[in-house]
Amino acid sequence: MEESPGGPRSNKVKVGQQEQQKDIDKQEHVGDQEGEQMPPVTSFDDLVEMAGTWGPWNFLIFFLSSLSGFCLAFTVLSYQFLGATPDHWCHIQPLVEANWTQQQVLSFAIPYSNETGRYSGCQMYDYNYTVAATLGYEASINTSFEVVSRGSSDIVACHERDFNHTQYRSTVVTKWDLVCERRALYSTIQAATQLGLLLSSFVSGCLMDQCGRRPVVLGCLVVNVALGFLGLLSPTPYVFIAFRLALSITGFAVYLGNFLILMEVSSSSTRSTFGGLFLMMWAAGYFVLPGVAYLVRDWQWLQAALNLPNVVMLLEFWLLPESPRWLILQNRDLEAVEVLTQAAKVNKKTLPPRHALMDAISRIRDQMCHKDEGEATMTVTMKVLTTVKKLFFTLTEKELRRRMLILVVCWFVASMVYYGLALSATNLSADPYLYLLLGGLMEVPSYLIVWGSLVYLSRRSTLASLYLLCAVCICINAVVMFSFVNETPVGAKIFLSLLGKIGIAAAFHLLYIYTAELFPTECRSVALGECSFIGRIGSIASPYINDIMGDVSPWAPSALFAGASTVAAIISLLLSETKGRDLTETHIIKNSDTSLASPTPPSVLHNTKENVFPA
Image 1 (tube, rainbow, N blue to C red):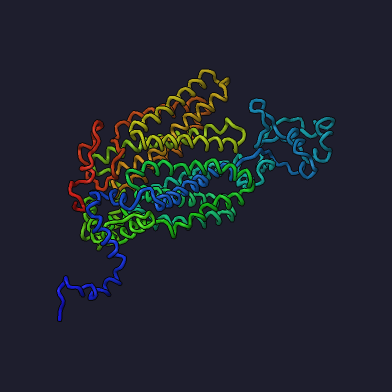
Image 2: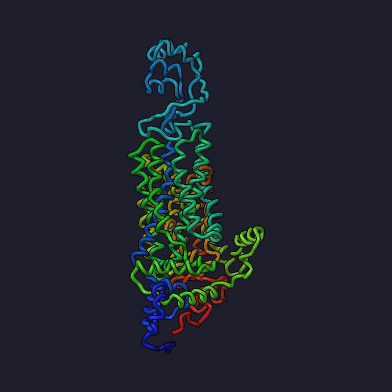
């Protein structure tokens, strides 16, 4: 005997199914009750809003992601302490064996420059030091000086040095004698760090688009932690340089991946705040570093101490989600639902019924892109070709190409001027701990400027104003240095340099967020990687500008930095405004987006007026 579907015993027949799908039925029940109150959903940002935007889950992801900036600051800036160069002079074995004091060796054997007020670090007098050691210091400089000096005051180069260990117990410079004719190896340490950032920015974006943000981040994190400790055992400077290269490659990949995940799990209402605060952790690492280095004076122990925050980041294996935007693009809808469900659960929010959520995601994906049905069966060769095409994807569409060409100039200038000011200001303070502390403190107001402008001001005008602020300050500095030459007040140079640094630091970090908003999801990480790649070329050029141009005219580097910042300020006005818009999901750019006067309406970005969840 069968019962009607609406009979009183119908629920008993479905008891087994209800037990198996208890969680799903609960969600559907709640969703059905609240369906009429559900806001219309036309983009992924609407789903993020439903899962919660200011809840505990969002702040947990923010903290984990921003910690990568703290660690990256340690990697990029620590060479100033790991490779610190104390005062040094030629090692003269006979005098050392005769127990001459440091001051006796310096005054007798080492040339002194009245211009620099320092003893030479790479040259010595061509004396008979064996005789001097036998006679003693007093006799050598008085009664027997002619015998010791052999009547000559010739100066010769030496190939072994002694170091002053009162400030630094041990550095890579003192360990491998990286001064004088071996100084190029010391410069290569920083060059390798910047080169690693450049290579990582070029490659990591493509890997994250192909393999996902989370796998690349976790893989690079494990390698980074291991390299941080293995580098302590470097037997030669060449091995140490190789470790620094690998550390910067993996460290920046972790940083970029965490930034992308944070941006892609945030809605348009929170992206500005989280994006601005994300940069504060770099500043925190910037001014915490000198404190750690002050307490730990041995380079090996210092490297180990600086690697500990990376160990803490291993918590991302359990807490860091994959970007649901990327999952949707890869047709991995169930995983995207799991991420949103977990976010909603922690934030104590209610999502729509699961079947409606899956249908919404399917429709959103149709808006984001039209996938090739045969993509899943592509051969390895085809996948390689697809990856290569992705590298140049931003140059295939006219509007994307226009944005990219403007942004690469802005990134090059920002990176060149930022590191140029940092490097040119080092000779204004004799204490490297104090200098780096002041540099880190100056990062804080620049990030606060970014945070406030992201919330209250337009992206385009803010970026142009920051470049202009830097240009004005550095231009005044160049004029002052040109006018007063050697009489330029040190305090004035410090003030103008730091003020200009605030402007360019804010512009540099605003570019990360602005670039992410200007490109669609399918090529966002590639665009960020390519822009950062160009920026690293600027950072590699900056020390050569300071050293070569600075030797000819001390004011010339400032003049160049001011001119470049002015150019960037002008061309940045040609970019489209993105404030208050959802992240674009498709590479189809409407003509209205190129207008400077009117922003692109939401309907263009969504590419449809139909709600994914019917009202």
